[in-house]
Image (cartoon, rainbow, N blue to C red):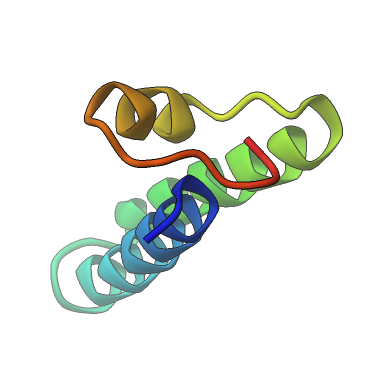
Length: 66
């Protein structure tokens, strides 16, 4: 799996986890969804993604976007 696909899979997992936590634990977990969405939005324009930095250090091979 490339870095790009890893970042997208992680973002999707975080959104789904956040929605589940919002429904079953506390409505304040919706802010995690907002944070993930804003992070994806800013990375589309800046090319910087903190998750990509972490995954790169973990040894995931680079992709085309990050």
